Length: 310
Length: 154
Image (cartoon, rainbow over all chains, first blue to last red; front, top):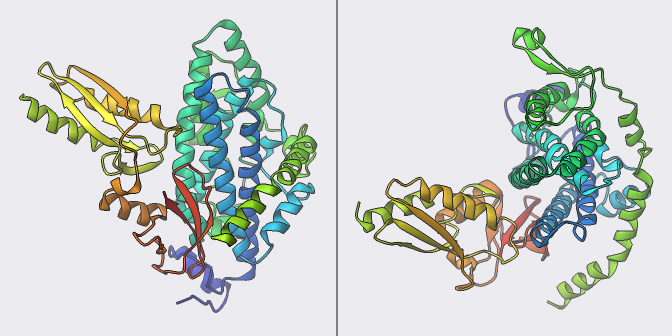
C-alpha cells in the first residue's frame, strides 16, 4: 500500500498530522530532493568523521583507548553505509556517484571535519564538544523525521552516539583532572574547536524552511545552539576551562527573562568556507578519504567475490 | 535478608541495567548474565559473558552492573567478572529482547535455517549486504520489499 497526494497542501497536511513517508509513496519531487540532500550530507559527515577517528587509532594512548577508537570508527563507517543505502534508494544519485562527488570535493559535509586535529586533546575536544553538537542536531532530526527509513536508521545512530558521549566525558575528565600540561593541552584544543562546534548548527533557520515544515528538522538551528550553550558553557567553566569568547555573558533578560548564556556575534565566514570545501584542512581530508577508498577497493572486491561464491 | 532473597534482589537490579547501545533492553534479556553468587556476608560476584571480546561497552556495562548491585540494601560488596566461557551467541537472547530489538531498532535475528525476515514488513526477501555493520555484533542486510536497511545480530 502506498500513499499518493493530490497536491502540496494535501502532502503538508499529511506530514502535519504526523504521517510517515515511505519509499514506495509518490512523494513530491521537492520533498524527495530535499530529504535526499539532507541524508547525503549526513552520510558524508559520518564517513569523513569516521576517517578522522581512524587517524587516531594508532596514536591513542593505551590499548583500551585504541579499542574504543576502533569501535567508534566502525560505528561511524557503519552509519555512513546505512545512510548511503537509504539515500541511494531515493533514486536521485547512486551510491557510487555520491562517493565520487565527495572525493572530487564537490559535496558538503559537517564543517568540523574541515579542520585538523593537532593533538590528542583535539580528538577529545571533538569527542566531547563537537560530537555533542552533532548528536544534539541528530536527536532533533530523529524527534520528528517524516521519512520512515531515515528515522529507523537514526534510532540506532542516536543510541550509539549516546554511548560515544559517555566515552567523550570519560576522556575529558581524565584531562580535566590531570596535570597542568594536560589541562593546558585541552585549553588549547578548546580554543581551536569551540567556534566550529558552535557554528555546526548553522545560521538560524528561516521560519519557512521546508525542512521544518516537512518535519525533517524538529527545531530551528538557533534553538539547538541555544540549548547546547546552556549545557556546555557551565560544564566547561565548571572544569575550570576558559571559553575563547571575550563577549560570552549570562544575560538575565535573555530567553524571555529566564536568563541564558549568550555568545558574541557569530562570524559565519569560516562555516561558509567549509561548505565550499575551503576550510583549513579540507583539501587534505578529502584527498585522504579518496586515497583510502582506492586503497580498500580490494576489500570490497573480495567481499563481493565471497558473496558470489556463497 | 537470606542469601536467596538477596540473590533475587540482585537479579531484579540486573534487570534494570540496559545495554549502552540498546536503551530499554536489559543485559539479562541479552543473555550477558551467566551467574550471580552471593556469600553469607552479602558480597556479590556477577559473572558476565561478552557478546564479543573486543566490545567497547564492556567497562560501562561492568560499571553499571556494579552500581545496580550495590544499590541493593543487603549487598556489602560487588565484583564483576568477564568470563571467557561459555561463548555468547544469539541463542542466549530472550524472546522479549528479540521482539524489542526488531520493533524498536530494526535489528533482527537469523532463523534456525539461516533465513531472515524483515523486521519492518515481514518479507522473506531480505538479503545480506555486508558482513560488517556498525558494531562487531551486527551485520547488514537490505529488504527489497519495504526498502529498508536491516541489521542482523550475529
